[in-house]
Structures are given as structure tokens and as C-alpha cells.
Image 1 (cartoon, rainbow, N blue to C red):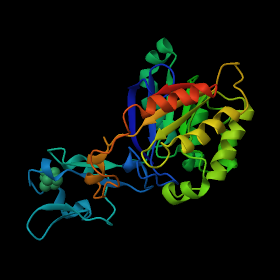
Image 2: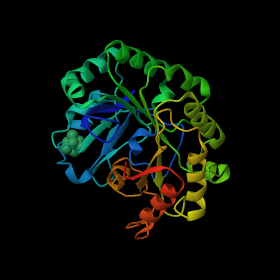
Image 3: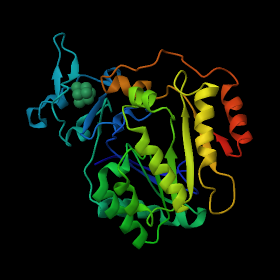
Length: 302
Ligand code: SF4
């Protein structure tokens, strides 16, 4: 189950890449910039401001996921599974379906269309999400096909899964881009609803295995942007076994933004942060300096 395939990406590993976004994630980070990635089921995004009230989506053959509200306005019937045909029916792009079942072979065929760009730029295929590792066998099948086709591969992951989900990918993934969001397990459990011990153990396993590993830290106001919280994150990163190439450990600081606000509203969900919330001016640069002082190769923005 994927929700997008994005071509010509330059921020998800080296070179020009195609990013395959897997749908579904075991965590529930409230700042998630892809809220349509979190649920494992297909979902409808609806922008009423684009609706021209043509009623095409109300056709009974489309399963009843859209309805007319009490005042005549078109609305989503949440809780009714949207049928794939709904993706095609809206003439004004008010409706978007997130979630498409595709075989690993079909996904690879789409990825291979841009092979010439990968070869020229040192790019390839990136698995992202959601959480790709949560779709174990399908991911493994796609990764094996990609390697058999000679593609460079990268993995964007939160690692919130048992170690057995990670180990089979060690030989199939060339670059690991791993989220590191906090080091306090109670805070992490309260906010992101996950088991931090499992994540930190997986990060240590990857570092010990000597894979190409970049840590990515979303910097979220009030969650991990204090010097105490970020200091603990940076200390954890700096204490990992050194990269096999002898260079400093790479760590990207990703500043909080609210660009996904419209997607939350299109999914019928409240955005959990106040409007206009920003990191304090100069904060990200200060945290980057702290990281560099700890011996890390810090990038702002990744
Ligand atoms: S198909 Fe699109 S434009 Fe037509 S009523 Fe439904 S949401 Fe509105």
C-alpha cells in the first residue's frame, strides 16, 4: 500500500531519486508532514473550496464514501472505505485518494523509467513513508528486485519496529536516513506513541553494522528544541560507533514548519499546533553549533 511515487527528488539520499512512499506508520507524531501516510488504510483528502458541486462522486456505484450534508454541501463520509474509482471521478481535483495497492514488480517498473537520471547523478530509489519497514514482505520483495536491477537504494525510516524487521534489509539498502526524535522514553511515548528503547537499539545496531547512516532530527518547538533535550540527542548520536569511512557522523536538523496544515484539514483532522508557531529565531543555528561541537557533521534542512 503506497500513497505516492515522487520522481526527481534531490532531498532523499544522494543524486536524483524516485521516492516510493509506503502508507501506514506505527508512530503518531503530531507534527507529521505527511498525515495521509499515518493510517494503513486508503483515505480521502477533500478540499471543499475546489468542489463545483457536480455530484459525480455521489454515484451509488462509488460506494458511499461521499455524501451530501444537511445543508446540501458535499462532504466525506468518514469511516466508509473509499473505492479506488473515486480517484478518477472528480473534475475539479477537490478529491484525492491516498492509498494505492501495487505489486513490487509494478512499482519497480515505474521507478526504472528514470534509470538514466540515476546513472548520471548517482541517485536511485528511496523507500519512504509512512514507515516502509511496517510492510515487511512487500518492502523486502521490492528491495530485492531493485538490487537485482542494479539500483542504488536508500531508506527513510523511524525504525519503530522489532530488529527482525530491520536485519533482512541490511544488505539491500545503500543509505539509511533514520529519524532520531528524542532520548527520553516517557516523553516520546506520550507524544509519538512509540517504544523509544526499540528505536535506539535499532540505531545502535545499524551503526555497529557499519552501514551508511545519516540521523535526521525534526526540531519541534516545546518537544525537543531545548538545549537539554537536543543536547541528549546529540550526545547519543556522537557516542555511536564511528562511521566506517572515518568521517564524522552526519546529522540533519529539520526545522518545524506547518506546510502540511492544509492536508490535515483535507483529511478532516485538527492540526495539533497553534497557527504561526515557529522555532525561536536563531535557535536552529545554535543547536547546529552544539552538534558540531560534539563532533557531528550537522546540516540544517538535510
Ligand atoms: S466530484 Fe468533485 S467537484 Fe464533483 S461534487 Fe464531488 S467533490 Fe465536488
